Image (tube, rainbow, N blue to C red; front, side):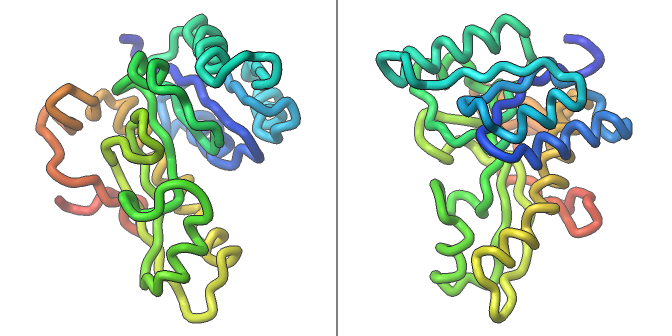
Length: 222
């Protein structure tokens, strides 16, 4: 492996988590290089962020492909051409087909706005509020064939305050999402974190629960 962690990032929208990765790389907080940013939407703002940072971009629209699997195979053929160590789903809104996910097992992560296993899928902020939860958060997990069900690597928590609506809760959570994603990627870049068939390992030891990022952006004691 190279000393610098090589990444490919998939986006579908505004790309704020992508920007957090770019900023962390520029500042030296994250020893990584984004080889390419790919999207299923030509108009995705995340592509513009990548272009502004001088990162190669590929927009591949699903229309014109006979099936989801055919599209996924075409998309990941392009990813493979860059040979990244890790693929990061940062607001990528498509469900990937099982054969593609299995081929990249342990080499693809996603950030999801809930405290998984709670609230996989969409509308997580609304669902947390309607359930009467007192806290919410975000999770980074390895991607599996089932949506948002892969092994959870790390989480961060925020309080749900009286009067919160999905928009205010999302705004409170977003900067913590950014911190969580970049801190988790730093563990990969430091060669401290890896997936093995037996489970997630940190510093050579298996994790028996997800890591938790504190308010000071440091990992909480296990």
